[in-house]
Image (cartoon, rainbow, N blue to C red):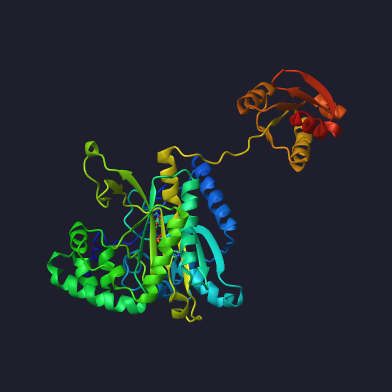
Length: 465
Ligand code: HAM
């Protein structure tokens, strides 16, 4: 007798009519990403306006580059051993099999565009600025997001340190004009490839002798990229690197002169800066000048010691862990990517961090211009006519508010009151048929009937008063 085949519950066939269970839609963006809501936009708008004005004042022209580039552009430029490339890139293969990455920063893409569009024939330096989102799969925490925004400037084709100073001046000016005054510039020079080679050997020698005290990542970095150890924020590595050799003590004559001139320019500009021998920055393309804009506060014993990632200097200043921006020279990048030998320097500011700092300090934000006129209407015919009226006012440069969706005149006038407009125009059925409109002065409450054809001139005349 044939035995009936038993199917376990797990492999039981779904009846043909049953649909696969739908995955739940999470009503939130992926971790480390967020919405920037209308109530926060005045801060963002202020940051964008101040940044773009500074860029224009210093002769920088806007460039937009794709959010997605080929992966190896970033891995070669930023460096295989860097945290960004090792751990933080959003990389994927397209349907066509291309390996691409969401940009973790702009500089590599700018250098690519500079070569691709033959910008080397333009008058030097080629000055470009950008603003937009970047992506790093980092561990989200205060001031650190997976989607964040940068504003930055790059000058390609000039090696004079005066441009380095100007870059610092520009970043500093943007931060200052946003009302953030508790910031210092930390600078260092990591030299040219020749200086870096001998400095690297010294570092390896030093860190080899302290290898046991380094974190696991740094033990690996010792082989791959010892300079990155100076970047490590692990407490034990911070202690070891405090007595490590310093790059500025091992610069060649040209690099030393370059750095000395930069510092003289900074003094001339009266920008508060400090030398930081451990500053190497987390990207491999840097040569010579590197700098960061970091908020500082005075150490307060009542608030306890510095938090993780913060440090206290000899003069009692607490250097906060999150830089508002950073940059430096990358004299070898364009050539490495296949272009001509092109010295270059640039910086980027993190807009998310600027906004957070502005809020913390109660800094001024951008105030949208407010409408001075409200257009109220009553009845279907009047509503139709008021659409046209709204457009004529807008075209004449008069900002108008309305609430077309509301029915009663009373509720519309309430909105007008709340907005604090100077004039309310009322268009009822009768006025719409007569070709007139009631002009109400909100301060005095006086009303006047005006010919609809003369309405725009009348409004402008009254607003001028
Ligand atoms: P960076 O230091 O990697 O440099 O980033 C610049 C700024 O972007 C940081 O100082 C910070 O304000 C902001 N930022 C970076 N990562 C995050 C994050 N996960 N969340 C929030 N903000 C962040 C660069 O990107 C270089 N391309 C700068 C440069 C331009 N060097 C030469 N030219």
